[in-house]
Image (tube, rainbow, N blue to C red; front, top):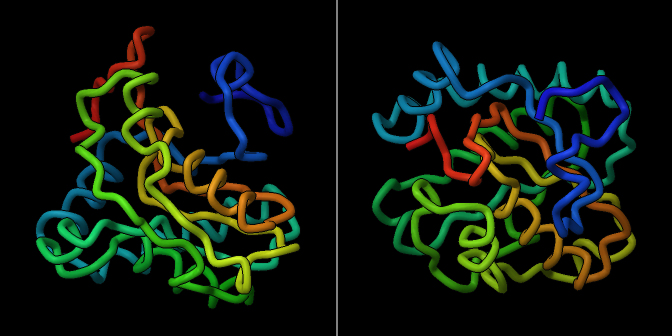
Length: 192
């Protein structure tokens, strides 16, 4: 949730996260929401590079020392339907801009998951539990930054962090272009 710099929001303090930090550039609304929808659902892949520029700004604000940038992987079914991974399309130009190595295969989705759109916090955690596997040869001993387009509760990024840490990653952070707003019950009020 929006907070002062270098602090942990009350929402995250009360949840069982293994990810070491998560930052969003902005709220998932207005023109950012429209751009992400166009990227994901209308194949406007040129928007990915523009969205990656927001992460460059975020990176310079955080001053996190990162060894490797990885995208949240899509499942086989969703990748086949869409034809591309929007998180990878954002993460790659971001990695080039900040001159940090990118590895699109450091983490893999090993189990298909249901859409998270209408799920509450605990349902989201359960939905993505064990859905990812990370390659120890690529991540062991490294500080890894996982990139995605949108987050609501952080469950997907947290599950990625769990897989990365199980593979020996030293620290795992997450960056997203936007963060949705949700009700107290953890239900998403604006993402689709």
